[in-house]
Image (cartoon, rainbow, N blue to C red):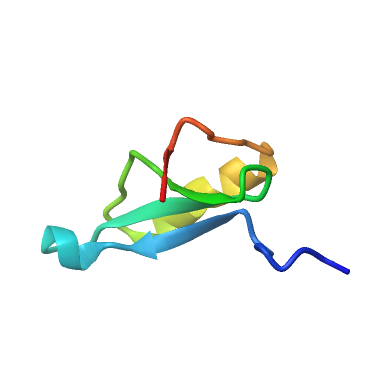
Length: 69
């Protein structure tokens, strides 16, 4: 049986409402710690944020220094 925690490690989150314009950050589903972490960096386009999410996924990054919630 697969873990119900998360199926994808990195996702793009639209936080535009908080900034008054197109703003996106990344969410890291940290299955090892069983927390969700969000990036310090933000992007002004979904495409740029998606590209960074793919880069992190491909590199098997584990950004445990990101804040958890």
